[in-house]
Length: 317
Ligand SMILES: Cc1cc2nc3c(=O)[nH]c(=O)nc-3n(C[C@H](O)[C@H](O)[C@H](O)COP(=O)(O)O)c2cc1C
Image (cartoon, rainbow, N blue to C red; front, side, top):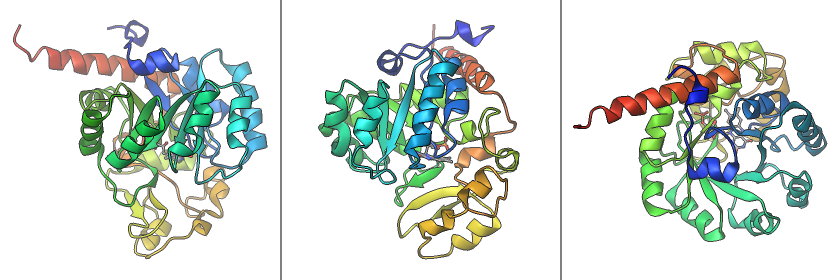
């Protein structure tokens, strides 16, 4: 297979989302903005614009920029626990996007309103119970998020290897797998476990077009698979982050308050890795270089085809 343009995979996810490749860039506060998301959409994936920063005016500008930077499709994430603006659904519908992921909250809350406005809605779930509730609420699909992923997590985290086939065996809607995916081999594994699309978070934080400071990208490239910590195991909000001096200290605390994120932007864009908490997944241990998004997506599709082909050849002719 010479180029990823030769490799296309048609699934219910590509059909519903209208993108060429079933690869979604994760929503991430301040990071999932036009510079990164347009690179993903231009490469045939699904770029997502965040709202979890709560900066809806800035988000509106980013959506406007998307229309200048790409002809590709893109979506918006509503991180329910972070955006409590009662007009958030009107806001998102008003931006003219066709695809929304809802996360960090109760699935029935916005689904009916978003569906009534004609949007395609996927809800992010960390458990089977959450998946069943979301399906009951009428979502078009699920983002099934394993506990190895970076970001806010259910404190009773379940790895993708268990969660994906469990949810896939109990629901009929299409699944996008999130958590631990950075390349074609992990995408093929997710498909074997029941997914029809994948979402990459940590891999996209470290991409060339990601707006974060190089110190964060270098930390991802340099980290081992054991270099994440789980904070608030017995409290809320549970989250998986990069191991630093700060998070190693916090790991032992009963409750880590949100104020620990106070200087987030000094970390995100100033490069001070001890200023706040860098959300990162265990897959950091598999990321070996900073690459442009187009290369990440091309390489992923090519490797996916090669891995699936290799498995197929194991079967008797
Ligand atoms: C820096 C960072 C910020 C994130 N912010 C959000 C968010 O705003 N909304 C959301 O639904 N998920 C968020 N997540 C979780 C991602 O959407 C994604 O599911 C997760 O990163 C997948 O695991 P991976 O890091 O192994 O790829 C965030 C993850 C990271 C690493």
